[in-house]
Amino acid sequence: DIEPLLSFTRAWRLVKFVDADMLTMTACSKCGGKFVTEPYENARHFLCGLCNPPARAGKSKASGALMVH
Image (cartoon, rainbow, N blue to C red):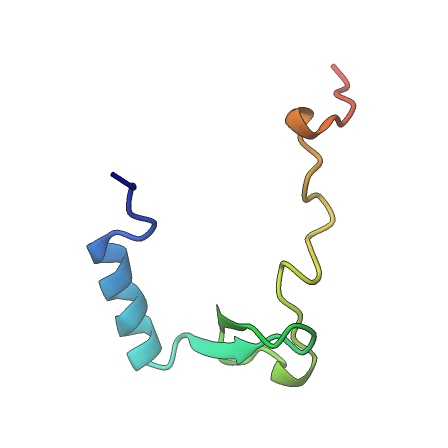
């Protein structure tokens, strides 16, 4: 009874993009996990979003951030 994370159509497109060398798998230089990235990503210094979260990650109202109106 779990909702799919990736629809069949999106999965098919992802495979097609990888086959056309528009996307590739790059290993994170910190945790070693492999992530889908663009082929020109600097693989030697790549950090995933888990090891290096974006600057605004967790800044929502639900996480306790101040909201200015």
